[in-house]
Length: 437
Image (tube, rainbow, N blue to C red; front, side, top):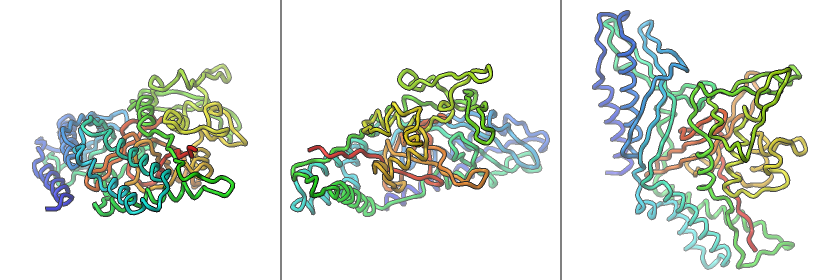
C-alpha cells in the first residue's frame, strides 16, 4: 500500500473514531447545560482531533488544551456552544537519519551533480557540495528532537433540545493571524497540510533548485570580474543559528503581557498612545538591542519600535545567522532611515531591499521553505489599501513523505512554534551566497 495513502487513511480513521465516540453531555434541558461539562467535552474533542492530524508525521504526541477566555468567553446560547482554546503541544518527528540520507530532495541535487560534473568547474562542484551539506544539516537538525508548537482554536457545536452535544455539528477553527486580529478559518484547511508532493516531484525540485542556484551565482561573471574555475561561492547565512536566535528571543506570550508605546499618527500629526498585547519583552535581546522609554506630555512609554518590532526582530535573527551587512542594512541603522528607507526595521523596506536589491530573499513555494526562511503577511487595510504589515521567521520546517509543516516565530505579537499555512503571505528563501576568491 502506498505510504502516502496509508497516512491519509490513518487520519481519516482517527477522525471518524473521534466524532463517532463523543461523550454526550446529559442534562435535563438546554438551559441547564453545565458550562464546565461542555468545555470539557469540547476540549477533549480538540485534543483528540489534534493528535489525529499530527500523527501522520509525528510520534509521542502530548497536547495541553486550556480555555482562552481572555480572547472570548464561553458561549452557550441559541442551541449552540462555542469556546476558544490555547493549545500547547509537544511531539517528536517520525523521520530518521536513514530517511534523511534517502531524501528525494538530496537525491535530486546529487543527480544534478552527477549529470553535470564534467561541465562544472571545480569551484562550482564545491559550491554544490556546500549546498548539499547545508540541506543535510538542516534535515538532520530535527531528527529525534522534541518539537513544540502553539496555536489558538475555536470549537463550535450544536446543542440538542435534550441538552446534549450534537456530535455531527462539531467544527474546529484555527486562528491564522497568530495572535493578531482574530481570523478564524476551518482548521481542516488551515491547520492540516494540504500541499503534497510525490517522491519524483521532490527529486525534481532538488535538481531544479541547485541548477537555478548555480546558474544565478555564476551568471554574475563578467569580463571585468572573471571568476576562476577554482573559485567557490559560500552561503554565509547559517539558518540553524538564525533559528536559534529567533527562538531564544521570543516567546508564546500571554494576553496579559502588554506594553504601551508612543506611536506617530500622521492623520493627527502627533504621537498617540498604542498598546501591543501578547508582547513579553523579558525574552528580547534588550542588552544588544535596547528600546528606550520616551516621555510625551508628561507620560512615559516605550518608543514606537517596541510596538512594531517584527522586522527589527527578523533582522536581528538574520544578522546573528551571518547575513552580511552593508551601508544600508546594518544594526546602526536600526532606528534611523537611509534615504527615507528603514531597511532594518520596516517590513516593506526590508522586503524590497533583500528581494530586489540584494537578491538574498528569493520567492519560493511553501514546500521549499526551510528554517531561517521568511513569511511576509499582506492584507487590505480598513481603507482598502494593500499593505505588507508583518514578517516572521521559519523556526521549524519538516517534510515527511511529501507532507510539509512550517512553523514560525515573531515579535509583536510574540509567538514561537506557530503553524502557518501559505494563505495571505509572501514566502521567501533566505541565503547570503558570496564569492570567495
